[in-house]
Amino acid sequence: MARFSDKCILITGGTSGVGLAGALRVQAEGGRVAVTGRNLSRLQYANSVLYDNALVLRNDVSPEADIDALSEAVEMWGRPDGRWLNAGYAELGDLDSVTAEAFNAMMNANVRGPMLPLARLNPGASVVVTSSSSVYEGAATTSLYVATKGAIVAMVRSWASVLAPRGIRVNVVIPGPIETHFRDFMPNSARQQFEDFIVSQVPLKRAGKAEEAVAVALFLLSSDAAYVTGSQYAVDGGLMRH
Image 1: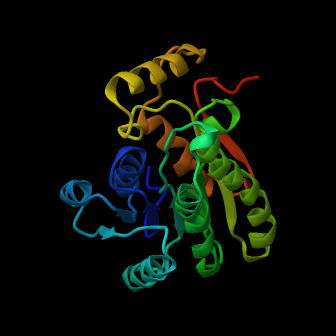
Image 2: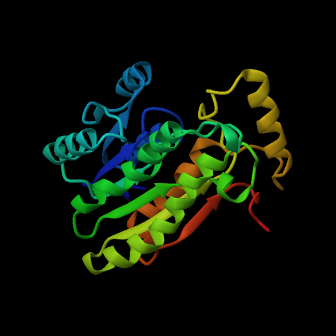
């Protein structure tokens, strides 16, 4: 398949996990790819495994200056035909532990960061935004994180209406438990307990692979999904079936 021949795709949060797997798949299907991240070692690794024509940028999606710098750098490299807005982070804690500082930091990264670059989209572009099945799970320790990821789901519906006259499609992919390093911020024992509990609720009785989430995201980015916009696609092994 060569769905991305002569196309440029930007993937924020693309230096590890699902994002990097997506970048490799875009290249395998004939496209050029730009990826962003914050972690230096992951940036170096991405640079080593992607083809030479890739653009690997150290960029934080939170500050407005970084968002503007990213847009300018990518436009010089090649105008994107698709954007996968995959960058974001999670922290767990009880409701009482949510501070104004923590709220602003996560909202800036997970909501403001994806929203601001949309003004610079080209006609006919495709946008995919990563949310999370956590929005629908109701876990006691994820209230701030799910607020940001729930906002993304709501905003995509509006973006799809606003951008449709420009031929721009916008969809959201909702991963469930996927085998990545996303929860590495948790202590090992707590992470294993959390992941075991989530997987126990999945009808397929396993965590998903990064490539399985990528397959859905790239379908939405490609012309195969030319008549799909404003939609939510869960990649969760049936976790959200109810």
